Image 1 (cartoon, helix red, strand yellow):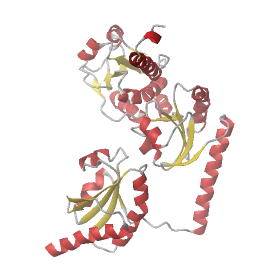
Image 2 (image 1 turned 90 degrees about the horizontal axis):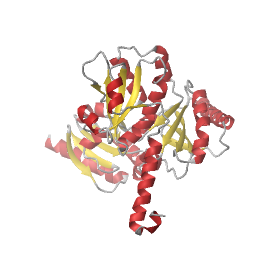
Image 3 (image 1 turned 30 degrees about the vertical axis):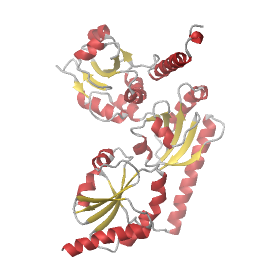
Length: 393
């Protein structure tokens, strides 16, 4: 009644605020196994056993992306007899405690142990396996074998904006894109978890899920417009969309059908003895970038797999590689900027859009190509600089 009498603009803002708080409440669930500490309970318990604590703010998008993984860690390790407690502290309410712990950014993850005078700050990427590896190191491998096996055998893998590109780039994946508030998603959840447990040790497929309220980039890149959306993905590419009845038997039948198709294709290739030619375009990552560009001319395409213009250029770039392959000291290469391995490299090379085409000569950036992207124009550009090098010699 009170809201209905408000100024329309104020009313809209008030409704938005209520919805925003509701969504945050969904992300930071009260029903999870994560132990929630305030200043008093933190002080009382922190020195009693090992703790791995997330200091966060509910409005922080990085915290929201981490939270499902933190919940998984708590589900696996916050059991009776566990040697470590997975906990969280809300720094928007426990301001004094967070100041005492020198929390200057969110999320901050710290490991506390009665055997250590100072907590150890976690600085690695926010993947479940990396978090457990960190705990192993801190606890001197005291995380029990059974606990470790359970961590490694999580049925449904949670994908985020930070890890989905790397996780999906190889192999076969059945992925659920969902929103926590979606009724159909809530109904599907236990069936999807059961499916994950069924295929947890399967070597040919993984069962995954993506929370689209938090991981908007991943969902946008796969064109997700409704929930739940179930996609079959092979080597980072969407192959099919599941359209049948959402029950465990249909899911199993669908997966087995897809794997049979894949194996049939593999058998056909083996039978016909088809030799796949190696690509004339060299794929670079941060670790081999400098050594590759250090000698001769290197023409590099910086791209992202989801980029339409990059897809359009791809066959021409392959043709350029073939055409240049007979020339000495000239390399045609590419860098996938969507990979976590290359994000820092692409930033260093000042890549601000895709595709970006840059020519290097003996390790130095010579020129960013901005001309027409036909095979003839690209070839002429490279040869012009190759001839210039020859003239200078």
